[in-house]
Length: 196
Image (cartoon, rainbow, N blue to C red; front, side):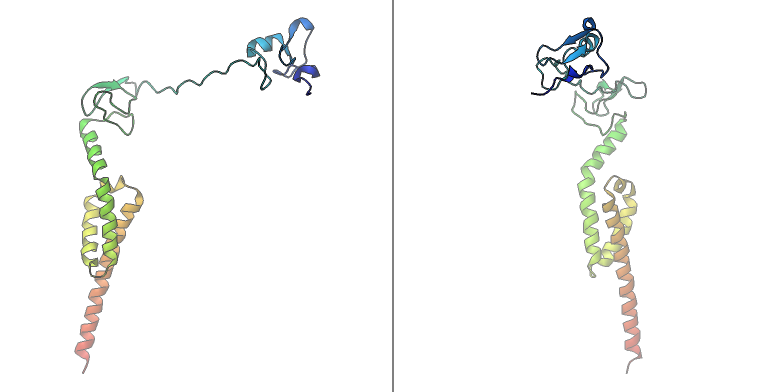
């Protein structure tokens, strides 16, 4: 049988010497000695597994900030209902927001539109890259990728960096292949003219 934690003459909570008998108390279940003040403050025994251990308190829900830049409420950019400033979903229409930052109707519409177009932008970047690797489609892919990346520069920033890199590589590879093909054809024509 193990020796009770308080048998050493020290309180098992504050780890200091126990005082006179009137200032101490003993756990009825495991017989561990404590200062009376320590027992009261802990609201029970401190020995793991003892039946006199105080009940644990459940963790409180994480508190959400009640305001955003001093505003406690904001208007939903989709339906106009008044919602909490820290809300990331409207209770009235179900619209979701990427952050608690208030946004106007135009910014919300643009973000929703971009969210719908993201899969198409990703597919286009990959398709242009693949077409840029194929010699017969390289000219088309190269010049298309060049104009497409400049026209969609802001939208590409919202995608993972790999997609913007693929589109740029498609332009570089496609135009590079076209340039070398033109040089090769020119050299071949010069050699053929100079031949017998």
